[in-house]
Image 1 (cartoon, rainbow, N blue to C red):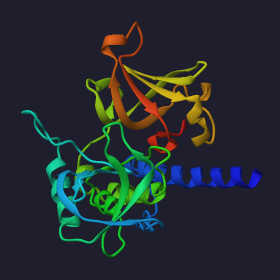
Image 2: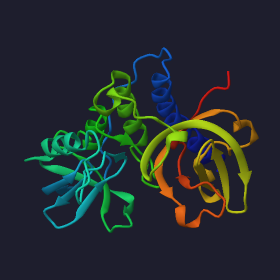
Image 3: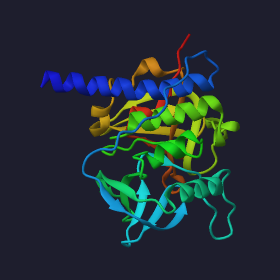
Length: 272
């Protein structure tokens, strides 16, 4: 058991280190070049082919399944008259180029479906290269880690760090928004100061300046090396995730919330 705990902590440190590197690069710190992403194709893959590409992270397979790529989130394509987010169409075009005419290998995630009924999995081309990592290294998406689908997390984070340092794709402009400017839901990359950390029976709540709070369920603490505490107050934090607008259930609480599932979602900057 002790060996398993040590192995888990080592894996967490490696994953968090890759994300910390990306954040340090954004802050202007001098760092060595991040490693090139090299995602090893896991066992248990199946051969698939693509019928159509919906957007930068979603496809329709010829067997009828809708596939949502695990480990990446790309900008949203506009629908119902709404404009597309920057780089959304570029991500779709790149994904189409990566899978068009390819013999592809799919590894379904440990959590095989999302709440829309889409298959969750990792896609590899005929050369064994990770499609998600190719998109991330081109700067056309954000690395996301949602347990238990974390098999390629280290590789995906390294791919993003590489694009972030080189300012490729969406990293060419300021994609990190101040928390105080938060005015909508959806996937966001935000930075602000922690003003309070509170303990509840089922969750730890991290309040940031402005309208945002972070919820860390106690069941997900197993993914973190340590729990947030009072030492976080006053520190700058960068956080990523899907912002939920709680307008209809505020009751005096902060309007927006991000659920924390994995330490790769955040970086606590040094207090120096």
